[in-house]
Length: 314
Image (cartoon, rainbow, N blue to C red):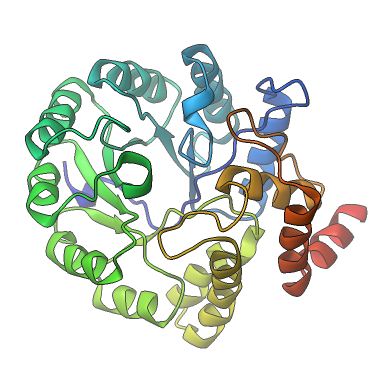
């Protein structure tokens, strides 16, 4: 299995998980959100990722999340299940449910908090690789794991049989470019920015897309890729500039929220549009009124509230 075993490309957002006002997983809200994402022409989605608050969900909730997502969107777009865990055995169990639910692959970080050695990280992924029968996307997420995996380790991981993609969320852009160029012939590379640098990576064929957060701008985010694929680079960059607004106003260079938390920001952005973002679950707290105003002002500057609010009224 290698990069050509899958067709993942474009904008594949890590989506939020809707919890209701009692902080329970709300499957109807989830279905509504999934239908909206399909309507907005996402190229795929990641569920139970960092944005999806996997860390506060029980195994039973993740099973329900995977099954409901599969029932709703199977065959309509690429479905990737976040199967992050502290042990390989737990990841393997979740990957089995994802496969049964119709997912096309799984996304896995090194064990968070633990900070194992390079050999420990390799052993973790090797155990998963040897036990699953579903494509694996390696997720390099330094803020969440405390590890920014180096090229030598990534090369070893990308040689594992079931590994087909790398989501590289390092905050070091030079490192991202070096690793993309070194690994793109083996795995699909996700994490390119929606700007001129991203266009160059697409032109050079060394990156395949972005597994960004939330999809809160709707079709405006996948349209960066759609326009690029049509040869309309100037139009693509106009869509990309919209994504860069929220990335610059809401997040720092390491993809850490400038205020509140990323999960609460994304849910607030959806809720302001009348979409089923729902509540964050502790330890993530809702945004304050002042923080909500920051999100609102960004969306207003992009005319998102105006456009989507009008569409909903119709």
